Length: 146
Picture (cartoon, rainbow, N blue to C red):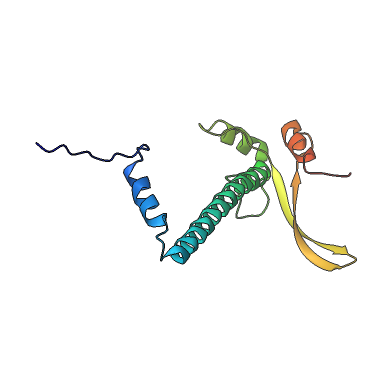
């Protein structure tokens, strides 16, 4: 009989880690290749970390921007071909009675010119009903002075 000893590693690594350590270990004649491999792996790790951070920041920025825009922008607008709507109270009551509608508010939209020391520009002005407390409360979060 012949006794055969099998050399077992003290560390039991997963299969993927065994392959990675086999190719990352330096042989005596290929020491430069191993150093280059380590720098490459570190560069890829830094690149992936930067990508994860940028995606997380942009996701939060997109959510914040979407919330700010949708707060004061209606999802549905009811317009008239004849210009302004004369009896908008009845239309508001009908819109509020529609299932799935959280609320409705009248507004007017117009064009104007703004001037500053840097120049003149055209703007779109949106007028709201100052008697509506919910809209005024949301608007106060965006006004810095006045």
